[in-house]
Amino acid sequence: MSGESIEPRAQVLGVDLGGTAIKLGRFSRDGACLHSLSVPTPQPSTPEAVLAAMAEAIAQIDPEKQAIAIGVGTPGPADATGRIARVAINLIGWHNVPLADWLEAKTERPVIIANDANCAGLGEAWLGAGRWYQNLILLTLGTGVGGAIILNGKLFVGHHGTAGELGLITLNPEGPPCNSGNRGSLESYTSVQAIRRRTGMEPEELGMLALAGDSQALAFWQTYGRDLGAGLASLIYVLTPEAIIIGGGVSASADFFLPHRFG
Image (cartoon, rainbow, N blue to C red):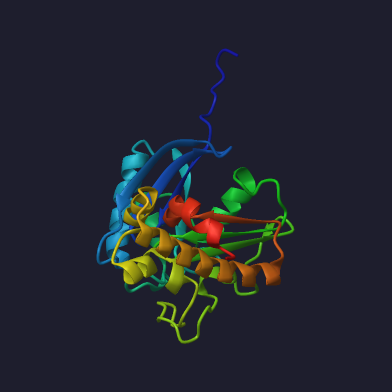
């Protein structure tokens, strides 16, 4: 083998843009995470501020530029070519932002963008809790509520590439306004923002209180579970998935709300 050069294993970067945090991972091509990093999302979260924070974080996690490409999950629909963030529902000023072009100019590496929940759904279907199923849905309970649909082993995105916004289905047409322009959406009842509005507290606080046996916190999670269950029931009737995967930060309190999802 003398004299032969062995190229290093190809690596890629994954970036998850959220309303609260930007999470990054450097991965081998088989999906193993080699390094991870989380930085706060700038507030206000304008495209320019987010781009600067993202580029700085990429330089931190991959100072030697070992990754050959970058994938970014954004909290909203991307165009069919994976270049433009059409809208990021819970970020400020995000309308038809050419994020891939901007980030390529900053990092000198190819970039593709996609809806963050779709990215999560593909990850779960490839290596996660969904790898045994051909038909599944995923909900991410975070700053907003995202969704992904896997049908016959493939991601379903519709003819415009923007299908699967499961958090925007309507629970109550007279309910609280949603940043999407809808009213009473699943997101407006079950997202982190909704929890703050309904309780004045963070999900983590409510989870700790429930763990300690606080009756008000337990009652809230029971109501939360019923609201989530109403949304899931509608999705089940339409899509008949083999499995439903729940992710996102709020899922840390699943022990308190899942028992009440269909109560």
